[in-house]
Each structure stands twice: as structure tokens, then as C-alpha cells.
Length: 423
Image (cartoon, rainbow, N blue to C red; front, side, top):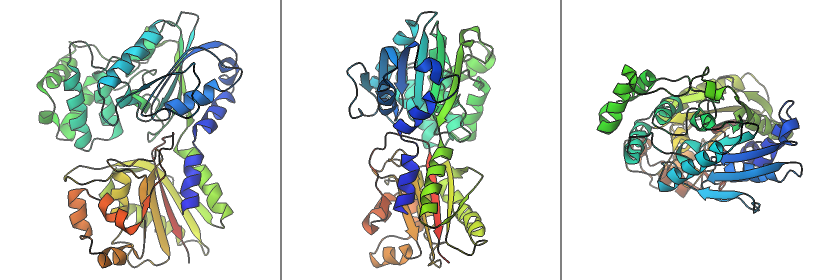
């Protein structure tokens, strides 16, 4: 199991995705020839920027990386700014302003390269003119804790921001190209990192619907409700749309995503003698509700084979926070499988976040097999439902030694799930 999940992460490391970018027709040619300005933002930003600047042919006039931590061997020419995640902070505001300053200085014949990865929405954030930063932060936090999916959350972020939803590209007089490492189901460039270099198709009405659907309307500050209402009336401007003149020279491409992680994991599983099946549908929804259905589907696919099978999937679930425990969506996904798998001695499952950090925990995810429930009971751990009620999955798996601890991976393409079946 560990070899398979490690291969998934390695398949989307910074070096691999940058190598893929420079080999793309129509991108690699100018990327390695013309002078460029680079802004990298996201969990993988320092590593991606370092990998790009390490190419001998690259000529970067300016280079900024905004992330959670510095990468090893960053060149002196790369300016690094640490900022807040999963919630923006004062450093996130400074990062947004630094990015806007660089973008605004790119001349009409210049080219701005945005290296965008998961986490960018929090790491580069400032409130729209007239809106207190604290109100924007509180609104994002309320919607996230209410269990909003990434599309709902990013619609809000983009409409309350100075840089998201294409606004960073709009500040640039030259061309803008986004090279994205996708942590988003569907690989929508306008959603990855809230699309700072990509036109936005979401509307103020979408923001209002998201707040209502998640039951978060009354939880957000009054200033935000007032702004959303004004936007719906048309008295506050929309984010730049696909036909906006300011974004006529903006483009983008996904250079790494969950598909690449699954491909690498599948190759590793095949080398270990497994038949590999990749589930076509992305895994989304409330983690505790989706997990048993995922198990049923994965087992149905695996049981069609008469040999050992590895079933792979990817996606990103959500967790509605109800308790005061420690955990994340992958840990909770696995916790919801403990009871269904108690009579399956030939099956092992794992789920991990490819960024190496799952929610409020310091691990990437967890593993479950047919013995998990018995070992938990022997240690006197609380019943699964009680742990779910507290959202305390970390303290269930940690004493069992069943957590997946990868450390920071300097990549982020969402979550990967693995089921191994041995007939």
C-alpha cells in the first residue's frame, strides 16, 4: 500500500509537472526562449518556481513565490513570501499586493507566467475595495466550516477579492499564461486557486445561492451580506468575464492533476503484480456519507477479477465540522469504512491528501483493513460514531499506527483513494 500511495505523490512532484510544461507544444518554445515574469502561488509554489528557474534556458526578469514554506535550494533570484493557510492572514494580504505590483509592471510586450497550485486562494488574498479584510476572512471561514465545496467557496472568494477571478491578469498589460497544478475536481482553471489569471464565469447570484445552500448566510458578517445583495442588484461590479478586454491575452493549461497521480500509482501497483482498475467518477461529497458507497462500488469492480486487484480513485470530499476534534476529510473518509470493512479480511483501503496534510491533522490520511475495528476495541478507543460526532478521526487512527505520514510533499492535486483486494 505504501509503495502505491508514495508513487501517486511522486507522479505529480514539481520537477515532473514543470518538465511536462516545457515539453508542451506552443508553451515550451516561448517559455524557454522569451523573457518572462513569474508569480508562483500555492502549496507547490516554491518548488514549482525553483524547478522552472533551474532550467538553463529560462530568463526570468522577476520571480515571486508565495507559499506555506520555502523549498530546498531556492535560487537567490526567487523572492519568497510565506502566507497563511488554510485561512488568509496579514501575510496573505502582503502577498496579494506584491503580486499585483509585479503584474502591473509587466509591459505590453511582456509575458507573465502564473504557477498556480492548491492553497493559492488562502495564500494570496486581499479584500475588495471598501470591504474590511476581516469581514472577507470571516465569510470564507464560515462557508468553509459549513461544508461548502470548492466551487461554492471560490465563487465567494473571487467576488470579495482584488486578485482572484482573473483580476491579477487584468492588472497586467502583457500576456498572462497560467500553468496550473490542479487540486480541483474537473480541473477547471477558473477554480484552481480561484483563477487569478483566468476569466470567471461565476456570478454574485452564485455566491448568494452558495451561502443559502450551506446555511451560512446568517454566519457571514453584515458587510459581506450587504455586498452580495448589492452585487445581485448590479450595483457592485462583477468579476472579469471571458469577453473582458483586460483578459484578451490571458490563457492557461493544467500541467499536473489527479490523473497523473493515478497513472503513477497504477504503474507502481502493476509492478507489484496487481490488476489495476481506475474508477471513472471523482469522489466528492460529505466524507462520512460517500465512503461506504465508494467501498461498495470499488469492491464490485474488484470482485470481477480472479487475481489481486488495485482499485484507484481521486477527488475531494468535504467535512461538516460538528465537534472539537482533530482530523480531516481523508481521515474521516477512512473512519467511515471501519465498520463496513470489519468482515473483509482480504481488503485494505487508504485515502490521502497529496499535499501531505489532512485538515487540522499533521498526517496525509489513513489506512483501514479488516482488523482495524478489533484493534481499536482492544485499545479501548471510542466507538466510530462517537469519534465521528467529535470530528476526532486523528486520535482514532494515530494510536493504531494507521496514519499515512508523508510530510510536506510540495505538490497538491487533491485526494487519492486506494483499495487493495487479495482473493
